[in-house]
Length: 197
Image (tube, rainbow, N blue to C red; front, side, top):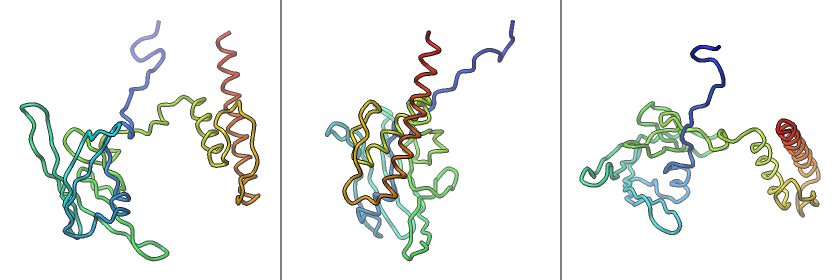
């Protein structure tokens, strides 16, 4: 018989980026909220109801976040200063980045953990697709290509025509990519069905 560590290994389930409240600097920039000395509330909603809210004060090179920490009798307000770094783009202009308060990494998104807003790595987060099995990843990728082509989702549905205005080369590349993803999905399905017999 096998000893410690032998046998099937189970992966530890990690939280996903989609399960967290995220603060995306690109959204703040698009909304024109990162101008120096602007003050605003940033909210997260679910089913039309506000589920979380923070206060943001912007300055030249940083933002100050004010947000609740704890719950019940232990509820208090915490402040966190997050540095903003700007890099120049090749075609002109610049791009803004957060500096993660924990590791100083340059990132576009900070996730609200238990007490701090930190990057995906510091929060030990994975993308939702990383929890999907190989078959569901392949099906998901195939459906994304179908969506780009304007086709009805689902492998069982027939392939459609070239969308109006799309270049033929783009259409052929996407069709080839779809056929590859569909073939991979069918292969996974047939192996799965063969294993259940």
